[in-house]
Image (cartoon, rainbow, N blue to C red; front, side):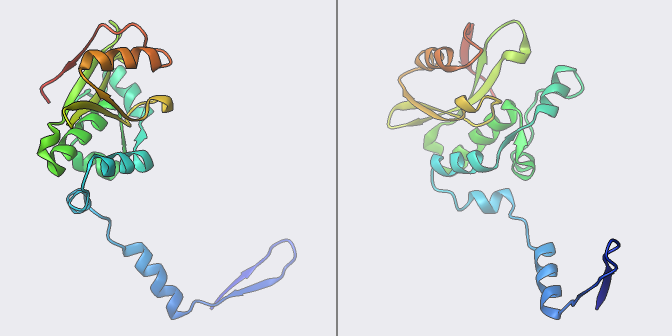
Length: 183
């Protein structure tokens, strides 16, 4: 039994610690954290990836500013690390989506797309494209702009996506190019 005294009134409160309470507390503290491989093995489509990213993935402004200052590289984190942290910048999100989509269904032919916006690298962006029914879709949940989050498409080409991006992004209107990259 624990006794706590309310300092203002001097009233004593008793808290009973029962074996059930201890068991519940222990179970919560030791509940296994699902790993990337275990979770993804249960996903069946691009929609599952989108749902997870919509609910869990948070844009990491601290990492973004650290990259701009040259303290970190723009190279993407591993999918396991991104999954565990549930955050990152556009490179992390695009790489995570690409690897995960290709693991779920190689027919998605998921690739990372680079959007070259300007000479200022802080405005450039990375997304993940995938194919479904002969069309291109873009999965983008790793953006600081909530209006751009989601699964976009279908598009017949990256050129169509370039127009879409340029007309809908709140700031990035002058897009130099949109192209696939190697990782």
